[in-house]
Image 1 (cartoon, rainbow, N blue to C red):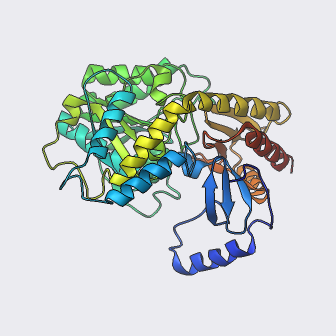
Image 2 (image 1 turned 120 degrees about the vertical axis):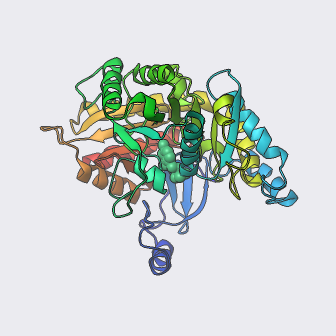
Length: 436
Ligand SMILES: Cc1ncc(COP(=O)(O)O)c(C=O)c1O
């Protein structure tokens, strides 16, 4: 697939417009799309649409295709597996791929303690299961989450997610026993240190919930949908210490940050934090649906036989893809590549910020970088600007996503297989979009 941006029609082209009309007539209105174009192919750092336009991919299908959307090793592994068998259900007739993925996750996740893994389909499903396990292991009901958190769209994870519109609006009532604590948000909390921000959160949880009632504290080491908010150094470690002291299960939701995305296998590593349980999905399987909960054997094994599972959890095709994706990350040095992508993005975005006070903050790690756009005088979030810049980039053939509680954050999550040339071209487009 040609690795360059090339537009042969206006965006959207005629074929995409036809398909969008069919989508409108056939697909539920609640299922939105970022881009007005339909995909025909994808790979490296490019998505090709049905009109033949080559778009630069700065989204990876929301942080999924870290190894690219058509990595040959993933394709070969899935092809071989699909020929052998598509499904038996691991709970009926188990197969080696599931066990091999569990072994890989036990090896790769932080900490050298004895671990176990259970596989599921989506990030939300894995988050729910992590909470189920923590509740059973502790015999406690409550779950602590944070401001701006995103954990999914199922009933429990909607309760855990912070933002109402669009994720929760009108979909309640929500699951009980979920309590929200203040986050460390260096750009907007006056530069509170990690230790002070953690003390503030702990104080609130102590007073309003009580550690003795808490089964788990669930946190994204870098928030995804909430705006790529990167807590001040020490925040995560102080929370993990408090959890350890009080028998609260510390759960890292690494659904978006995991699998090399931030320039480490897992973002917890940047802060030397060893979670009790770690939840993974997205980048785990080169684009196939798979998720996991991995953690301390004594916590994971608290659940009775038959208590965990699901028809498709750890589907053989997804497991084959995961093993190939993990091998690709290791063989191709994609962790280091994520770090270099982060340096390039940060340098180019910093140059843009020098002449543009509307870029309030640049944050994130590795290939998970964002800019927060603000009204320069007040510092208020400027969601309209983020929307306009993203739309202008889309028209010029760059797939870029927005996020943030206030919708004013542009986030960059390219496949780790993207070339520097494509990144520079995309950043040129972004500069033009901001100037326009
Ligand atoms: C941190 C985090 N947790 C959970 C989820 C939910 O994952 P899924 O959409 O696979 O259910 C997401 C998805 O964006 C996420 O970013």
